[in-house]
Figure (cartoon, rainbow, N blue to C red):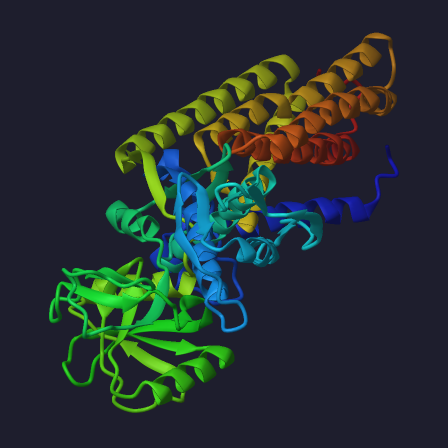
Length: 538
């Protein structure tokens, strides 16, 4: 005991200083933090949805739309291949219905050739984890030679893969859209097979987030067909598209070629701007290299044609191509407000969702409820803290005072680490801190009881303290290690509030081990060396 190394003293002081260094920003307003030098820490503990208010959204992904899109694409591919000069297959009743594509071949001689063409359109099922083909094809076939009917549908493995891929893509794109709004610490996670849970703390405008997440944001460029009446018979390969609400200066409906000449996948960036001709808000976009080349070729070839910009199946702009656009830059005009132009830019930058989202459940937590929770959490912490301080002082005297100082340092270290990590503190997290306050003195109680036993057995103060620590250390490590394992498992397999509880509990266990085994021993050693008591007051 008398050989307590100086480096341990210096190390303990350094740990306490670091904890205070990262904790202090929580006692300064965010406005004042910005005025501090940049080398000083400015990270604060983030409050979760239940503490500062915000929005809770449960979204469902429309998997059927992905399947229908795949089947509609297959119909288009079959029509294109059957009409190729080297095929010229006569067919009828080509279309998709009830998750199936069917086509009837007119001539018997064309049937086998048609089957081969369609089977060649089947793609291998790709693994979402490894890009490796499973060896299976995504289509299954029902061939009726007697009626010359071919029926095609997606097999179960392909549907499962598309569902999994859609959820993963949706989570990533939702995260991008939410991050673009400047919202911090959103919780976005999968729930079930086709649902996504979104928690956004501190949200000031929940309607804006709902609008952003409710749009698929699928951008396409298609040619307008002006010589066909929108209310008349629409030829194959064309369709009627409605105008978006922002497209108020044009007609209500358009006939467009279904063929997509360019899509949002080629978009590199999008930003709000002002249309120089009208002075109204607009969205400027820039295409990647392949998109720029494609856009240049289209606008060179189609000068004089009307070119529709379609977002989620609605025409938002339909300008006439006056001259070739070869720089890869363009502008989307319409009757946008400033906020609409900003939101459209966010949607285009974040990318299109693979399928539409439906809001199944929505809850808004007001900041007043969160403030009540914070106040209740503070009261719980203060009551637990004061109760433990009184108990330790009455039970162990000056040794209890040492344990109380260690407890204060323990809370400083927890707060410092939470600030450094910018962790999100939730109500269960506060519960974890309250539990940590109780557990933090547990190690000291074990040590002090051991020391008391040694004093009763007639040991000298130095021998009693040495034996007390050496005999209690194994029990302390075992007890805290088992609790730490439970906290790690809760963090690994839990979600949301469970993770918040496990984080604060785990940090509390680690810091309490340091304060009980190292810090309190150091303080007792310093007191013992200076006072040199003949009897321990414990």
